[in-house]
Image (cartoon, rainbow, N blue to C red):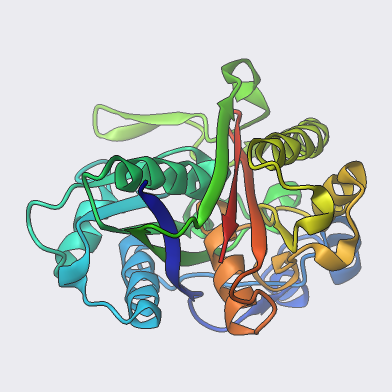
Amino acid sequence: MIFSRVIGTGSIVPGAPVSNDDLVARGVETSDAWVSERTGIRFRHLADKGVSTSDLATEAARRALEAAGLRPADIDLVIVATTTPDMVFPSTACLVQSALGVPAGAPAFDVQAVCSGFVYALTIADKFLRSGSHKRALIIGAETLSRILDWSDRSTCVLFGDGAGAVVLEAGDTPGILASALHADGTQHGILSVPSHPEGGSLVGCPFIRMDGQAVFKFAVRVLADVAREVLEQAALPLEQLDWLLPHQANVRILQGTAKRLGLSEENVIVTVDRHGNTSAASVPLALDVAVREGRILPGQTVLLEGVGGGFTWGAVLLRI
């Protein structure tokens, strides 16, 4: 039987960290206390003009390849999860394929599931590898969300940041991804969106993130707890044997609420939202790489990755490192 396993991780955040006080100095009507007490966010990173989503994705991928001891020529599948592509088309994945030198002919495509995007992309890649059609995949989550923020709306602009994370997934006979589940509920599309589209050479509608924070919070905590139980049940893994819960890094209260609903200690939850903010599709792989490189997540441990985002979409992947 063929399985897939994560054999390398990588990530990048652009520029110097931007504190809550820095945002105040830039004219955002907020305070460090207001932001940190409500969200747990203290810093985020913002890409400079000229730094694209594909730039961040490419560098995160390079670092994941280095960690895996592989070259771009060893990759035969590239999937990028992003909400903020460089352009309408071609896909960011094709731009990354070109920049890295991944061989022509390898499929490359984007996945758009907003903050669930990386979990969706990882699940898709797992199916490719388990089918026997491909051997090694690059799965990347990358965002430049600062480009779609309304800096006069303190309820959203303080939450988000830019960055990228990547993993190398390899087919083999040792189980790595133990279970996965993906879901969506399109009836909830209105509570988190960027309600605009290009038409006739201009954008029609609002080009900025719009969010009903309370509705998102309630929905996210419920579905993250439910999908965690779902994949643990699939893998027949008791909660007590789970080493780490790594949810989408949106808001520390959502992370705490999910852990409480599951009956899991907060000590077993990976938290990086305080230093990166919400990086949407980059959130999960960025936090994964940070935790691996800091020596918190160790070989042989089980990690439950979760995402929830606009659509509304949600999902989880249970993996053994």
